View 1 (tube, rainbow, N blue to C red):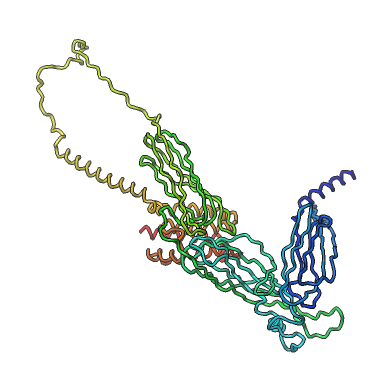
View 2 (view 1 turned 45 degrees about the vertical axis):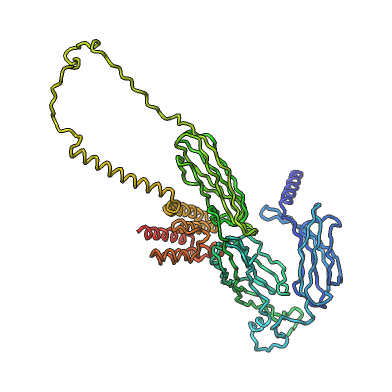
Length: 611
């Protein structure tokens, strides 16, 4: 029994050791030190290192007073039958800065199981001895009557807490992705935040990225801060000109240690009080210059920006008449691929093109969206013969070269064979029987009389009668009516704008159903993203506004022009709520409410536009 228990224990130990967390090697050092102050720097590892594999940094600008000293330990915990094992290995140094200024603890390396791991460079701000934050009064000289809040506020200088929105580039082309990062910079202990107001990114199509929150040690304006990522976004400008990203605001709760003036009666008496100070900070507005597309865009350009490739395939080169085939087109690359529309295709006149099916696989990164969009063009060949389908063209704009790039597929040859399922009419054979072959068979069958017939009119003939002319006129009118009706339908079927407008409500309903499924699954991010697709897509299709030119302002102008002013305000308000709820942890309305209002406002717009 004891051996079995021991074997089970060893197996569990090996299993949970294999599931241990990944190796982390990092530097722990103070952010601010005095020029004559001795301080401690630790290099911490959560695994057992290889022997003699640690390589210390050069410590340029510092004097090494002590070290290296090594400490290590391990622990095993079993909680509710679950066992976890941890290992800590720490190498410590005691340093002293040679002079005031900005200093950097360099990169240290260590090996674990034959693989090397490195720390990040760690900046440290070295101050002259006795120097304090600007605007901070000396605690030892504060009056007894001064409040704790006043003393805490006196210690918190203006640049100890800052909010900054940085962008990857300040000049871009329309549709070119821009990475925006909202960061909090702190030199004090932050314990919470309240009332965050994130930028609305008016004039941009925005999508939030997954990013590590931090903190990270960074240097800003010559000072060292702990930086926290509050949000990272990919922005796609939807209009040219100067677009301003409004300020973000947040209230930070900072924990301040304030020296008190109470007499110290023993060694254990605390000479500092703790005060939680609230301070509202905001980021400066950021302006991005959006350059328009150059003139002379090809007809096949629909607003795609980035770098793409295109592949096209015909499902079969031989098909029977009245049978279906399809062309499979795939556009891959990086850029605003989510806005790529299906290229136009020209088929022979005897081919019928059906609704294009689009699928996509897109992943958003810091460089933009990458992946592919696939379009399937199903068609039916009605008449036999040999045909050639013209090449398909797709044009995108390259920001790197500042030029349009046109991709073209090969032409497709297709042979249409006769339809084997059609039934041909058999010829009719008439046999003439001579009168010598006709015999009298009773009294009901007699030979045709060959003498001059004596015929007389029983009723008026239809030809050239009034009824005859009425029927002829009616048939002519019906033919003219059918000509105009069928012609209009043919023109409408070729009018992609009209067809798209008529299908706008149907497409929006399909997207609302997808959003409803996400709502039932409580998938907030996917729900609000699908609601935005439904609302933006409906307006674009219904009023023939290209996605690249679609903004809240253009929506308001178009609906106001059509007499739907209230609906314009309502739909832009819903879009703003969806964008805010998609990236904010606090919802201003429930998903059920947003879903109901979205369906209601689309129905109202549809009823007004159809009048």
